[in-house]
Image (tube, rainbow over all chains, first blue to last red; front, side):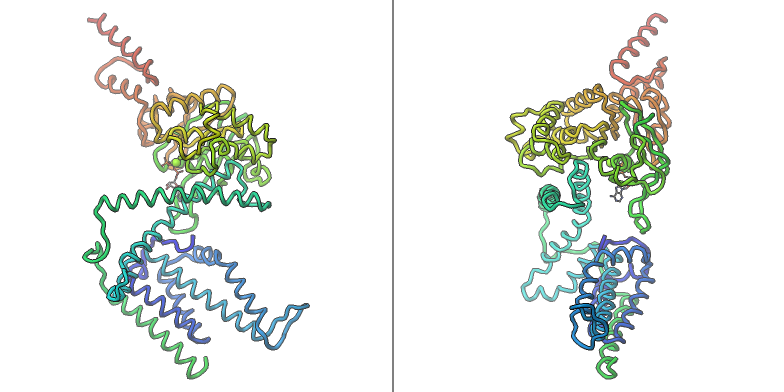
Amino acid sequence: MLGQYLPVESAIHRLDPRAKLLSTFLLIAAVMAGGWAGMAIGGLITAAGVMAARLPLGVLWRQVRLLGLIILASVLVQILFTPGDVVLSAGPVKVTVQGLVSGVTLLIKILLVVLTGIILTSTTTSLRLASGIELLLKPLGRLGIPVHEIVMALSIAIRFIPVITEEAQHIINAQLSRGVAFYGPGLGRRAKAVISLVVPLLTGVLRRSDDLATAMEARCYRGGAGRTRMHAMVFKRADVMCLLMTGTSLVAAVLLRVTLGL
Amino acid sequence: MPIIRMDNIWYAYNRGTPIQTNALSGLSLAVSRGSFVALAGHTGSGKSTVLQHLNGLLLPQKGRVLVEEADTRDKSFRRSLWAKVGLVQQYPERQFFEETVFSEVAVGPNNLGLSPAEVEDRVLEALAVVGIDRKRARETSPYALSGGEQRRVALASVLALRPGVLALDEPTAGIDFMGRQRIFKALADLKSQGVTIIMASHNMDDVARMADRVVVIKEGRALLEGSPRQVFASQGCVREAGLNLPFPSEVMARLREKGFNTEAPALTVDEAAEEIIKCVGARKTAQ
Ligand SMILES: Nc1ncnc2c1ncn2[C@@H]1O[C@H](COP(=O)(O)OP(=O)(O)OP(=O)(O)O)[C@@H](O)[C@H]1O
Ligand SMILES: [Mg+2]
């Protein structure tokens, strides 16, 4: 599953979620804003991150593959529709040098962005991720934006993803057992299959959210100011190092591109 | 010839990831035609995983599953398997999506491609087996029924396929006494019509009452197999699997501990009562 947390002991898992979030943004910025040098630096750091997080390559591959179609489609569009010097043509289809170059560039950039995202979500529980986002967005609270409530809603949504996935699997199994055709031909039958999943799934979600709201009220939950955290978050050396590394890579990527055109 | 055979099957969820869970580790079992087999096991022992192998929802990662001598890994066979082995999952009432009970039960037969008249026949028959009024079935939404009724409608929606094998996952979980009686009555009727039934359960009273074979599952393996009488006589094994004895057997075991001279592992309350009367009588004459 995309974005699934993988409970392993590693240096990256132990990092402060704020440091991980910021580093992820810095790294993505370096890859997107930089040229070839930016991609090389980003690639190196991403590879180091994968190793330090002890993520099995098989798992990474399966998650990337889930996005395979979207990635492939965007790269193909880039290759086929960029005007320039034609190197290959078959009928109306023309492939240009510029198209190939920008296609490959796009492929590398997307892969790096996806991989950094996967590192973040596989090494951080949704709870810690939400706390990190909340703390980073806290200054916005002064502008009257209800940061805590937004993050609470977000983290409940994230928390429910595996539950809903499981429920969906359960319902799909039940419908398959009654011969509902989720795979295979026939638009009408497929539409029926979708309904047979969506109706019970929504019913289940409504029941669950109702239960959750009751449970939260029964525990006198009220969001916002004055709430404390079970695990206080403090920046450690490793967090600072992580930020320094990704920050430097952003600066280096931009400088190399601007000054040397790399 | 057993109607179902599982040979040394292995299955792990999320295989090859750090969150891999081994659900089945070399489980073998055979089910003979027309029998009522109970899969008894503690939470997480792998009962549901076994049931999902029966109608091809899951395929063994090692070993093989044969249904009427055909391998479930065979793709063209698997396409027709859902109608041969009817699976009623745990909490099957979460699957409803039609507007009326009648059309909910008709989903399966419609997917078999039967004529409307035949679909109607099967739906009415299935509703009769589970004891739901046919007039009400045409007017009521499945979500408007009580929990026990919903469970029976879900059962009917699988029975309408007229499967030769019925696989049930905890069919009475969360259902009150009367609801359970009705479900068990339906199952007994089906068995007398020759349907092979496989039921996962951790309620040993239900197992003792309904099953003629019991397979005790522990950590994805079959630990013990036999008639209820044989299985519940091996108290140690049953306890090791994290299960209790049926209530009457438990009572007799306690009486034995307290010095009653009785060997029989009573399975039903009537048996226990008779055994107790016998023992008490023997004591009185001895005095
Ligand atoms: N969809 C799934 N994803 C990951 N692990 C699973 C999944 N379903 C079951 N498991 C795990 O596989 C093991 C066997 O589960 P299974 O549901 O077959 O047990 P069970 O005997 O039916 O338990 P219960 O009595 O609680 O229903 C358990 O450890 C369970 O946590
Ligand atoms: Mg189960």
